[in-house]
Image (cartoon, rainbow, N blue to C red; front, side):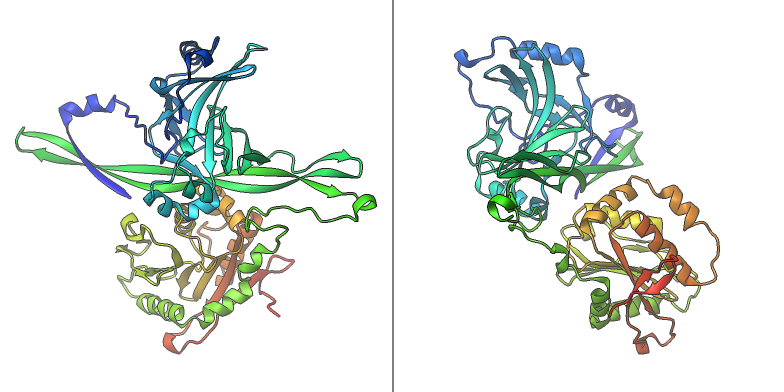
Length: 521
């Protein structure tokens, strides 16, 4: 997280508001390095020169374009980009002539795959974290058709660690050992397609997620089967917020405004489908062998059962019950919250993967708050807070939004993570049982897609006869929207809480949508 302060006198403030700032970053964002090679005069374009390309571009697009890269979806904070014509280069091959250039961006943005995301800070510290990104204008000399798009080269974690030539990859040139993906976007941000590379060779086709999932091409003695799976990439975006407050400048005798800018990194998922060709023998000709498919999660051949590494709710409930440290921490915030007294506030804690306990900087009857500085660089293992008084047994919509934000920021990676609410009746714990489903769910939560439904069906102010009904409602909501979340509950209604040895119980819904204990036999 970055913080900066700016002071402006009022007579200068209006003038500054009319100015837009653009920055071209080196490597750690969409701008990247130009990756340009010097082109000899005899290889320069004959028709699509840089001046012709610029004239065409400026007749079709505004000087500054707003780009949202989430597979054509609406972005909360689109990038404002403009071409850096001073670094434009010409290239050609066969019937195609290309003019390409880096782009200027208003905010830091970068696309990484899942593995690189987990090593983000490591690569950034080594100054090896980069995309190779260009605005491309291309002309088909045969048809005369001209088009423009954005190309983004996303190196794999292993490739980024070893290469010093990432920026040399461009639309008509690939390094011989390039390993990763190249993605193509329209200037409105929607994905066109892409290609997956291994050791400089194309091994798969990348498409937006709504493309057909399987294509077969027949051939005697067997067939080529296009094995398809989904992959999620992450656009690392630096989002900044401003807080302003007036101050008096004694030197000039005027009032001015001090602006504090706080920036933090947020992960925006981009969902794609990758298809790789695999030869499958016909049973009449080869006995029907199982195709060798490289798994996008574990990287092994024909692997299966990745989710076996994620404990099931029954196993997790037992693990929580046997974790004396967690039990002690939950008991402590229960005792600070109940029995309810005037002035009692919410209590809470974050327990990190390295055993650090982070306490909130602010608490009141309705919230606990942590600053970005407190949690910077930490991976969460446990995140719990209490609801004082007659507070709900379930998380609020605001709680789910906070959980989704911290997940997108990369603070929640471990399969051991649990999130929970402590109420008078007990402790509700939530585990992520499907990272894929929760990634999609978290994005929808932050996009406010569920606000109306939640307020109408769950947080509607209507009293219920039993607290279990609220747990049932939230579990039905999670199931309906494929949230990838499972629920466990620990009864704690005991004023002598240190003598309360109740265990967590995995919860489920029966065929009538009623809350029951999960069958853990």
